[in-house]
Every structure is written in structure tokens, then in C-alpha cells.
Length: 166
Length: 367
Ligand code: SF4
Ligand code: SF4
Image (cartoon, rainbow over all chains, first blue to last red; front, side, top):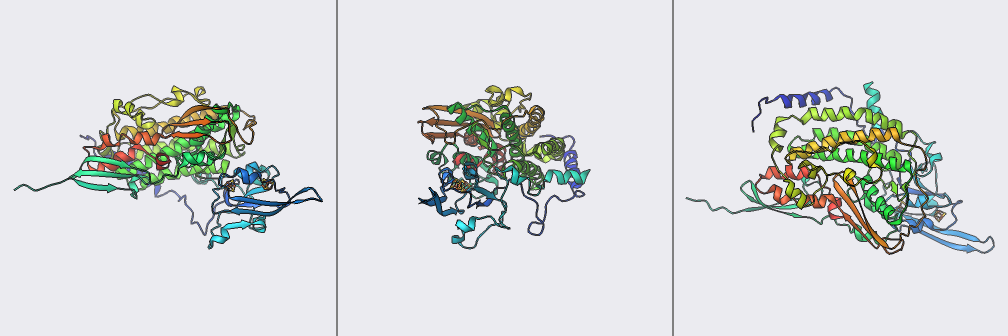
């Protein structure tokens, strides 16, 4: 092949690379600096509202991975189910969120936190009390717009760049 | 004196940074020249088609995310269209537009990786792909905003999408549409006329029109050879007949043409996005669909133009809550069958380049 203008294309490309020297970096130093996650983040844990749950097990039937186990007994006096065990093996959970969508009583939520690595395999299986919401186990706004509205606004790379350039 | 020579068998992959996944090629070399090549795959087989047979129709959607993991939204769309066709589920207007916006954003994201990886394989080490990953990150931010995940979206449902787009989505999309054309121009400035790139990719790995048709190639690989075939035009699904866009094609079908087709397609996707953004109506985001879908006995095939080509889902229903059979027509698998013809006679360094220009995704080939 023959190139008449040898070098011009390369010079053009290098100009772009050179421009980047003066742009602000777009990355952050992760463990020290943290961005706000999406308000609908499907973090790797489920949050369960014990009082709302009726033990209908719709979530367990919906879960494509079959990781939710609901064991109930019948309370003959009040004529309802009592949830004895609600267990999620988060090791198998693919965070698809279908259980949240299926729960007819709004008793199940996705977690907002995402740093949930565990040292022991047994810790991955979460039962009853371990699934309740608490200060560091916030609920995510996935399928719940009213919860999403209370969470901090997501940091967008899109906005970071425009603001700096303007 | 004559030297005794013999062909040398070289294993490329399965763990090789340039095979884009766990793809293995057994290349027979004569010196530096490739004389034979045998693609071997199956290292990422997860039995998705079989798993689909024991899940509910909705439960299969997370599985489709894991087919071509660089374009999960397109996979969701293809599958949902097949279920809707099978069960006769209507889709509200607004949901159609949301779907188109997602599918086109996904096309840009997927092409960014395809182009970046191709340039990386050409020897433009890391710089272009890192720039492109930055732009892809902005799209992933948008997806994260609507569905809470960056890669496995699980967003579309038979009859619409899982939830309404948040209020901050459309303003963010506007910003993206304003910025993105400038970035694409910058990429062009970066490498379009680079002499080294031209020398390495022009005329290399030419896929003739006859071969492209006979292996039923699709997507940018087919269009790179100059055939104007795009499912969005040829067999419009969803609401694509309402949008105005061109189908970019190449001329000779070499690596450079395939690369250019992808870049031009990003521009066309932006055009579709602009129009969809203008036209998006209010209303429902999902029609009323029973929790467990039981389509009538029958079979159907629905196909879409996924970023990598024609993605089809063939579903058979026996009126139960799970598909009786779910087959995926994966574009990467059919495109990759051209490899042997393309590579024979080229040098070992071109092998990586030709392979990069095909843009395959192992998740989809092995399923
Ligand atoms: S998120 Fe998905 S996989 Fe995890 S428990 Fe819920 S339905 Fe099952
Ligand atoms: S679907 Fe909801 S109410 Fe029913 S068992 Fe699961 S969490 Fe409880």
C-alpha cells in the first residue's frame, strides 16, 4: 500500500492524546473516595420486613435460583400463618430482583449497600433476624420509588465531566 | 542443503487476552503464515437453553442477560418480544419507546467495546479502549439508574418494562446526546486516518458477499461486506418503522470496513435516540400481565437486530408456566464460522486482528 501523507494521521491522533493530558481524571480512588450508587441499586443482600410478611412464599416460588426458603406454621387462634424461618442463601442469589417484584405485601426489599463480602461460607446464608433492616442495612429504591426519593442522588460520570468542562 | 520444515501447531487461547473470552483457536502455521485454523469453543457452556426449560417465562429473563453480557438489554428485548408474540401480550406505547431507547443505548455501549477492543488488537495499546470504556461508563450509569445494575439489567418484561424510568433519566439522556457526537468525532480524529491502522487493517480478512450470505452472517460483519441488511428495516419489530436512520455499509468487507460500520452505526443510533427522546409519550410502562404467563400451545420465532447481529429466540410452549423449548440464535456463533476462510493465508499477527474485527462474545457462542 502507498501512503502519500505519511504521518499526518498519527499526528492527528497524538493531538487527541495530548489534549487528554490537561483533562481532569474521571476516576476516583475507590476505598477512600466513594460515589453515590444508583437509588435503585440491587446490592447483594435482601431486606425483609418481618411485620409485613405473611408467609405466602410467593417470593420463594418466583426466585429463579430457588434460594429463598420460607417455613411457616399455622396460628389457629388468629387464623394466619406464622413465619418460623425465612432464609436466603445469598451465595446463590443473582440479585435479579424478581422476588421483590413478586412480593404482594411489600415485605421484601433489595439492599442499598454493596460491600458485603464475607469470610465464612456460613455467613452467606442469612436467616430471620439477619435480614431485618437496620442503620447499615438501608433499603434500596428498587421497585419502591418512595424509598428511592429519600436516598442520595446518584453520581453520574456524565455530569462530572460536563460540569468541569463548562 | 535443504532444511527440513514442518507445520507448527499453535494454541491461541482459551486464556488469551486477545480472544475476548474463553475462545480457543488451534492454528497450524507454516513459518508465520496461517495454513489451517480450527476454532474450539465450549469453555463457557452453562446450559442456558436447558435451564430455561425449568424456569417460568419471567424467570428466564435473568438468564438472557448472561448470553451476550455486553448487550443484555438487547437480549432482554429479543426474549420479551418472543414471549409477547407467543402469548399475544400487548405493549403500551411508552414502554415501546423506553425499550427502543435502552436498545439503542446498548448498541452504542456494545460497539464502543467492539471498536475499542479491535483497536487494541491492532496495536493501539489501551489508549483508545480506555477512552471508549469511559464513554460506555456513562451509558452504564444511565442503565444503573433505571434498573440498579451495570451489566445484568433484567429490565424488560413481557408486556413492557419492570419499572418506570426515574425522573432524572431523561435530563441525563439529553446531556448524553449532547456530548456523545463530540466524543465519536474525537475517536475518529484519534485513529480513523492513522497510517499504521490503515496498513494493518485495509484489505485484511476480506469477507466476500457470497461467503457472508452463505454462512448467514449478520450485523456489522455482514454490512461491512456491503450488504444492506438490517432487521430493524428488513422486518421491523417494536416501533422501528417510525424512525429515520440510515444503514451504514462497507465496500469490500475487510477489517477496516467492519470497524467503520460500527462507528457509523453509533451515529445512527444517536439519531434514533434523538427521535425517540422527542416522541416519547406518557402513559403506562407495562400492560397488565398475569404473574405466571401461560402461552397457548404453539411455537414462535422472534428476532431483533442486536449489536452483534440477528439475535433470535425460538420458543415452544406446551401451555405450562415454563417454555418447553427455548433456542437462541446467537449472531456471534454464526459470524465466527467465517473465521477459517478469513484467516488462512494471513500472518499470525493478522489472526488476532481479524478475530478482533468480528466482535464476538463468548457468553453467546457457548450459551
Ligand atoms: S434477587 Fe433473584 S435470585 Fe436473589 S433471592 Fe430474589 S429472586 Fe432469588
Ligand atoms: S412474598 Fe412477601 S409476604 Fe410472601 S413470603 Fe415472601 S416476603 Fe413474605
